[in-house]
Length: 302
Image (cartoon, rainbow, N blue to C red):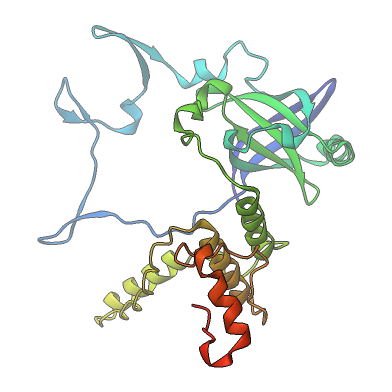
């Protein structure tokens, strides 16, 4: 069971819900330490006071704000926990909004909120039911880790989830990254939509959504531990030639997506591609002549 990383209460009008905050995610990635290659001795980061030139223990270390080069203002953990804010010890709900009104780029880590005992069970359930039926999420503020946070409360399987949010001024303006002005035809849009439809699915379950990098790294570590050579990396697929025709790329993408999904009909639902420039209108009479004489019929280029 995950440990509690913060305890407080949800303030919902005059309703108070005591809760424990627990992490909603797990880190399964492989982490490394630093070692001295000559003798494999562990290399550690030591905390040294630059004035006394000696290593200091954790009990000697505190927080401070650099007001100027010559003045440091010390701040204790007790002072941070007793800030004169209504959000210092509570998750204060300020509003309820539709989830699709929030830009996903503002959303961060998620945490589960567990009710703190039997007393919190009923108001906790009340908030879960209210959020579920309203089809909205709650926007809340609370103080945590030395600053006031913004987030949303939503429901997942009858459990409240607290999702961190970035403040508006923390999101950069993407206008400077916008592509130059170009024209996109309706045929190209239809082709892109055909690819979207082909790749659409109802969930994210499947072999393609697993962490293959961590699995491969674990196999390398296991092989080296057993003093054997790791398995050779598979030969990379040949890089496809650069396709300058966007419609051709869309057609090929749709066909490959259908083939990967095991569909027998790999023909793309994209409109017929325009003929290459070599087949100009001047050669149309030759095409009509081919219908009269079978010996001069030409096969279309692939």
